[in-house]
Each structure stands twice: as C-alpha cells, then as structure tokens.
Length: 238
Image (cartoon, rainbow, N blue to C red; front, side, top):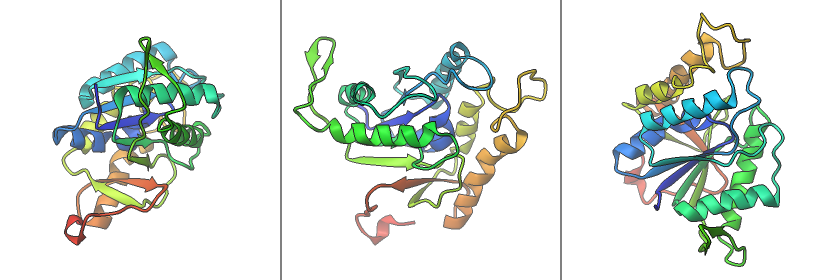
C-alpha cells in the first residue's frame, strides 16, 4: 500500500496531539495517511504499554488512517543508531509516503527531538539504493519522501508555516481523548503528569485557535521545516 502521508511520533499520542487535525483534513481530501509510533510509551507516568496499544488503535480508527504500526524501540532510551534507522527505513520503503510528518526538533520531552532527528535521518538514508532492506523476504526499492515537516508539541515554537484546520479540531480532540489513561480525568487515581491537567487538555483547542487567529481562520496547526517552504504562486497563499 502506498501512502500520501506518513505521520511519525516517538510515542503513541504524539501524532494526535501534534498533527491530528491536519491528518483528519487530509483524509477528508482523499489522501491516504498512516501512522508510525516509534515506542509503546512504556515509561509514561500513567497507564501501561498494553493500555496505550489499545488507545492508539482506537485513536487511529477515529482519525480514519489506513494503517498504524509500532516498531517498539526503547521509550526514553532509544538512540539515533543504524539499527533504529533501518527499522524506520523499512517502513518508509514499505509505504513510500510523499510527505512525512514527525516530532518537534526542540521540545521539553527528550524523546521528541531525538525522534525528530532519527526520523529525518532515516528519511534521507531511505533514498540511498546501496542501503539494502527487505520486507517479506523481498528486497525493497529505495524511497525518499519529498518533504519532511515537524509538528509543534509542548513548546510554543514559531512555525515556518501553518495549516488551516477549521472544521477538524473536534476530530483531533476526539482522537486525543481516546487516550483515556493519559489526559485529564478528575476521578483518576493515577499520579499527575504534565499532560494530565485540564489546562493541557484545553490547550489543544486554544493553541490551535490562537494560530488560527493569526492567519484569519478559526483553527490552525503549525509546522517547522528543515528547508525553505515553497509555494506554486501567490494565489496559493491564504
């Protein structure tokens, strides 16, 4: 199966929080989108890896993605190693996405910039034909995504561009709330975490609303890019 977009996150829920509304919008436009989680989030303050597995499957169903995979590298301790790069390269070559969305290049959680760099490097290396990978016993063809963009996470990083996601923020929030173990629940007996407060839950909407305000729409999601962002012509700007 060939994908138009592959969204990659260090943890289950990174993609939903970072670019969930964008994914929902692109799917509504007929694009085929998949998600790759690098870890199972086993070090998370709340819940467990097994719970996160079920939650991520539910979130994927809500968003309507074609496929969701998890390569289960070590949460918190993974490195930008050849072994981990090859695992991502195999997925990139398997689905041949035109665009990859991935973690923020700078963020509070150490796995986010690590995941960002690991993914970016794997996207480049995936285009080198002398790196051999196999899927189901068959040699894979080299494939390099045309674009790699980084969604914004905890830190309010200034975006290089924003996407109008008006009409899709509700779907994003619904997908995020599939992770019942992670987010605000006044009846929960689990320890508090930076993402379990009501303020954090509300921030999903008010941060998107503020970005939308700045571009004259209701809601938006922001991205950074490692290269210049080009537009076809001035009429493509909003």
